[in-house]
Image 1 (cartoon, rainbow, N blue to C red):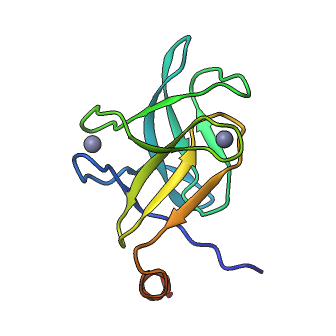
Image 2 (spheres, rainbow, N blue to C red):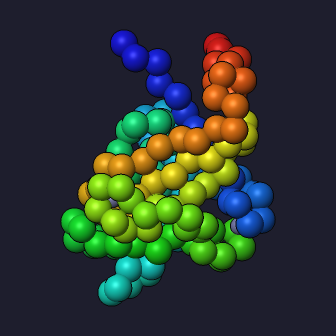
Length: 133
Ligand SMILES: [Zn+2]
Ligand SMILES: [Zn+2]
């Protein structure tokens, strides 16, 4: 079985953790974000396991909707640096606790996402060290 990496992410603005212990997904704290769609506002909890797309959402979201993500702590919009190479929607970035960043596509249903480290080998060894049982 592939090793599952649970990501701990922080807001790029206020540097507070976005992890929510009250909503667990696959036995890990979820990543909580406020979202704004063309129709309404809501909250999304993303599974923190890398390459897992499970999530809980309290508003109705049509597939293909581009969503704005906001920090639930400081209410600033998440950083957008790139466009999705798959669908052209903005890519939203979060800061990883261990360094580097993770980017996800803001279009609901688009699977594009990636992790970018300044120094991949060092960060990955930190990862595995940190999550060693
Ligand atoms: Zn914040
Ligand atoms: Zn996309």
